[in-house]
Length: 174
Image (cartoon, rainbow, N blue to C red; front, side, top):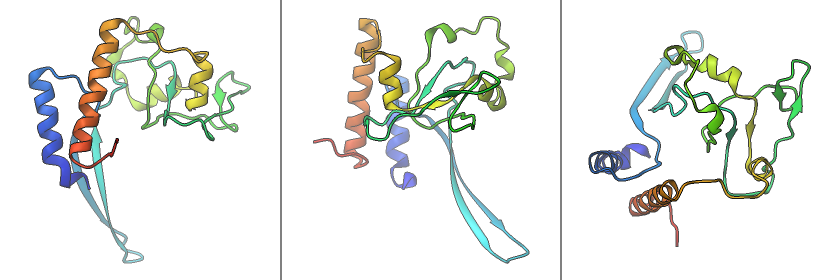
């Protein structure tokens, strides 16, 4: 499916980059097809993999929220374990492909070696992937504080991206 819209996607992102247009779309840097063969069973398989920009690189993440815009079944009970790390049903969680919240007090690179910021380093920083209702609880139902400029850029990004995705028939907002 991505390969069908890839030319339009890369054209859109290059226009955004070269003309300074705001976007919040993830940056896909490569698409690969990986084939493998199990010599014991004789089964052959093919997988398609998209490689995306690591938006967490060089950042210390305080909380991650996987936001879908719904409240139905969108709450994670967070329990404090014996080692004082948050767990979900006793299992630490880390990573998400959904929405993120960067806690400004944790966004600084001060005192942090960003040259070795790998996935294993980040996994220990992330307690639990939280959901929509957790986000509302975290913000007490209040909007996130954004400067007027940040709000305008974010709003323009959403308008640009939804228009583009609508034009290539990925989403339908009517």
